[in-house]
Image 1: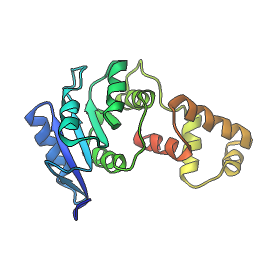
Image 2: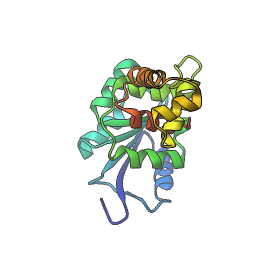
Image 3: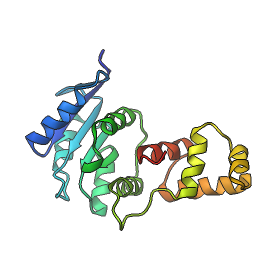
Image 4: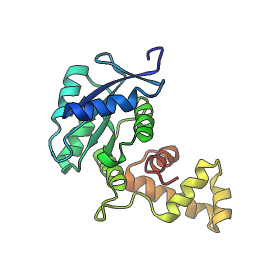
Length: 196
C-alpha cells in the first residue's frame, strides 16, 4: 500500500469511461490510481458485451489481483470467467456510483474469493431486474440489520418473536442460498446491496 492508500489500476472499454472512473477515484485521499503495481484492479467492460476483454487485458498486464468489475449482464460462463480472473465484486453500470465504487474497492482488497453463484445473485440484486432473484427477503433483512447492530440470536429472537432456532434457520437458509461463508459475510452482502 502506498502512502496515499490503496493503489488502483483502472481499465475500461473506452477512453471516456476510463477518464470518468479515474476522475471519481482521484477525488478521495484513500485511493491512488497507478499504471502498475496496483493493489486492486477496476475493469469496466462494454455494457452491451458478453465477453470480458478488458478484464483479460487487466489481468494479463497486472497479474492476479482482486478485481472490481463493472459490466452488463453476463451469461453463466461469464460469471465463471470473472471469478477465475479474481473478480470480488461485479457492479452493474448504474450501481457504479462514486461512493459505492470506492467502498467496493476498499473491501475488495481484503475480500475472499467469490463464486459464480454469489456474483450472479449480487449483480441481479444491484441491477434490480424484475426477473432477477431478490438477494434477501424482508425477514432476512431484519435479522441481518439486528446482527449489524451487535445483537445475538437470543436478542433477535426476542425482538422478532421467534425462537433462537428459527433465527439460526433464517440465517442458514440465506447463507446457503447465496453461498455466503458466515454471518459477517451475509451482513456485508446486505450492506453492499444497500439493504441495511
